Length: 630
Ligand SMILES: Nc1ncnc2c1ncn2[C@@H]1O[C@H](COP(=O)(O)OP(=O)(O)OP(=O)(O)O)[C@@H](O)[C@H]1O
Image (cartoon, rainbow, N blue to C red; front, side, top):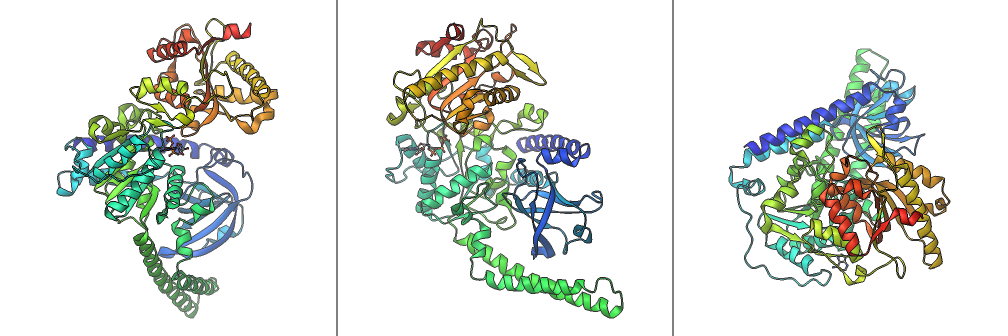
């Protein structure tokens, strides 16, 4: 089928470009640079080690310096332990088994710690993650192989070769936690035979809806549900909410956060308290003891010693086989009892649950999920629920070629267009004042959004303007190129002047200082805004003000949002701003007040921004920066 051949090709391009970027980073840079890039911890200290499944060794280690550097280590990723003495040869590979704070556990593909690990400084570095690509590739091939077969019904629906079908009459379950469109979405999910899509615009309670839908699904047929999302953060949020509804949730992989409640849902933690694991622990200790004894023969080479050494190792291996059996029994027992299994898209293929099948799989944040990764969980189920919003940011694609040729189009987006009967739009939002919501609703959601009464009229203070466009046209705030990015220093300075004035109004109306986000599409402008902020008197409100790119704010909300548009030139070039989905995210983060600062003469060359300007005028939110300054 061309559908999957095409996806396989796109995935190959993505993998090749991603690998090339990784090699460039690792081969031509120093350990300091790699540490700064978040792929290396150096130096580290080994805290403990224990034998693990498959005659491997799991080592717990901790980074001892440079603890404030953000890193990319995560559960399931391949990594290597190395020594500074001879980094080329003194190295042993493995897989990250746990990551939390400054600690991680790595299962090394070796039985014992190598001698070199006892002297010299040690480090750990992420390897290129071929595993994830292999899993995605395998899933695409499998989907291609079953598409013509009976069990390939879902695959045919998703690739537009069959219609999605629905049960004619599903009993309506009253649910007082849901509004009408949320209830309709749950009904649709219960009635679907193959596919249902929950389209959740900003603040419309997508999570609330899928949690209730999963509860109803389990009531409907008592079958286990697999719930997945592209990011650990999204998986964590859902896991917690599902558990709070009284469901037995098993979280595969390890949480990004450190909440106790969440930790209690993980396989590791559930295993630790399982009654049979006491025996396994005891046996592991014995095996470790035998291995230690065997080590003492290391430097004697007589036949008798060799035989004894071998006998000890054989015994250790025999015991570890027992341990593996007990562990697998415990894992199967826990996985069997769970009502919901949660994992990331790739994480649901972890060896512990790899061969499990489910009736229904739910993909949350499907608007941010790479399509090949979605096929991993899809192949485990007969019915698929996707929730997300394809009018917000798509997943990040590393290869420009792959993105251009379609890899950035998500399965959610394709299916929302081709299977309109499967889609329910959540219409009521609980975040924004209606003036903030209005433009996004008109441009992206067919004017169907309504603001819940509890938020529709919310203002920062009496008489404030909830949505404004402050026009810098004619002020001479010119953009400047900065590498591949752009900055606009005058606009940044003006933004703080505006904010300073707002801070005065806030103080005068004696309300608590609100949460404020200052966002810009351009990284260089964000850096400049951060610098100016640090030097301004407003820095006293640091705890309440965050400054970052639009992409980093997806999924978040603030009382007040400022957007610095940056682009101001005679040619009307707007580059990055032409991705209106990014602007949709930016404009829908604010609860009570949204201030957009930009040059109308430049940006209105795109009809989208001309509409925005008109909208601001219509609601009395058009302001001139020039007037403001004079
Ligand atoms: N039916 C409802 N009645 C009252 N409040 C609701 C309802 N549905 C959602 N909310 C509220 O709306 C907010 C957003 O809900 P939720 O966290 O479920 O949405 P989300 O899907 O995570 O957010 P987003 O829509 O931004 O993706 C929460 O504060 C929630 O309490």
